[in-house]
Amino acid sequence: MRSELRPILDLAQTLAPNDLAVLLGELRTIEIIAQGRLNTPATAAKSEEWLDVKECAARLRKSKDYVYRNARKWPFARRIGRSMLFSSSGLDAFLRRAR
Image (cartoon, rainbow, N blue to C red; front, side, top):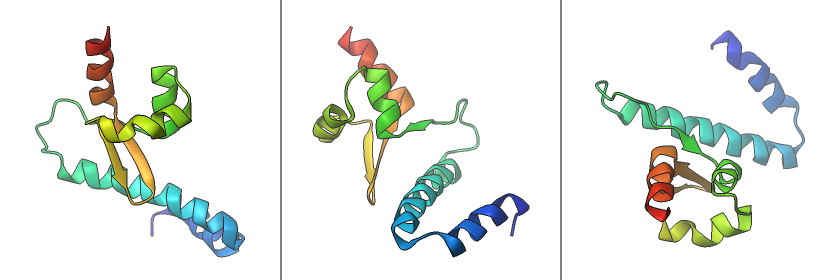
């Protein structure tokens, strides 16, 4: 195991059960991003950045509730398990068209 992951393993062994659910969600987000990088062709000029709900809301200058309510309409939104992620480049294109 990578030495960088040792603290996370220790955390998983000591966290309270309620906090474990949060940790698993955060680990799932990391896994999704890593899978996306593996599935992206090596010739891609720029790697895709994925935003969480809070980051997307900040870029839109809207509330997190607004983002959740409208995510189904947006082609740059992806629900992966319980996580909702947003393509940064897709959001940029959406904002350019909205101007």
